[in-house]
Amino acid sequence: MTDTKFRDPLVWKRFGIHHLSPAHLNSYLCYNSDWLMTYGFKCSFSPNIAMIGGNVIESSGTLFAEQRPNNPDTVYNYAEALFDGAVEKKDENGDILPQSDEEKEKRKTLRPMVDKVIDVVQKSGNYKGTQKKVIISLSELFGDEDLPDMIGYTDYEFEKDRFPLTVDIKVPKKQSSEMNFGYWLQGMFYYYGQDYNKEKGDVEFHQILSRKSTNKKTKKVTYSADTNRFSIREYMEENPDEDWKERLYSVISSLKTTLSRCQTWQEVADMHPPNPDDWIWKNKEKLNARRKIWRF
Image (cartoon, rainbow, N blue to C red; front, top):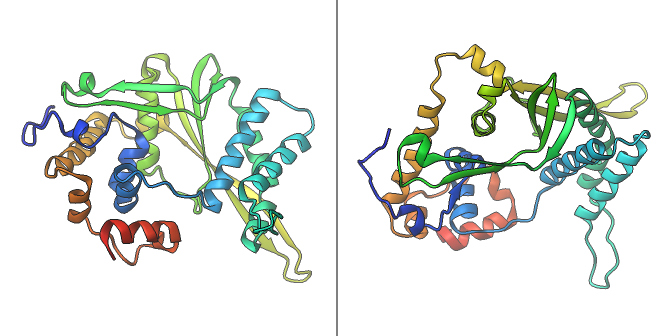
């Protein structure tokens, strides 16, 4: 499967890429400007409110999985305290500023979302741990000695019905009706990286989405949450003819080809100008990074 058209054994070293990850490849394929800023120019951005909420829900699930408290208030209080600390801002005198309307609104969604992540953990079986490191040798997988390893970390590990189960929590803005490329890539990586094809294991993604509703008569606002599940094993059963290795290699090959045509990250950026109408530029930190990299 080795592609010799752009054979460049030093390309990964030249660009400081010591390993790949599902997030790296998904960013390259789907969010080109973000990919360049994050992986090329090593820009660091403050987490937005959605990212903070997602981290809080995942951490709350870990707390419940490890401690199994009888009272859900323990997890609620933990989630709210974690959120408050993450969004906390101080004025020039060191006094804590009030939360913004957006932050107050997000805080109100935490409890129903915590209920959902607790439900996911309870139904997933015997908890085995979190942040398990998974490694795939791409050079062995594809017979291409130039390729670096692929490395990632799982959210949760369980044993269900005597079989291994990896669970990944997603807190997206919108619900997906089908498995997107990012889920597929991450799921296949965890599945084959842990030999689940031999152990009859599975990788599940659980989307947790908050809902807000207002009573037309009383104007009372209530918050709830929904879940949506995707299974890698079920996906493969529905798509038996799909060659996951060929699909993965095409993305890696595309990345390698892109880099092989350049000597520096700046050259890569110049070849891939950003879309000025992209929604990501609403973030002031990313807009400033764009001005430095692309000079507009």
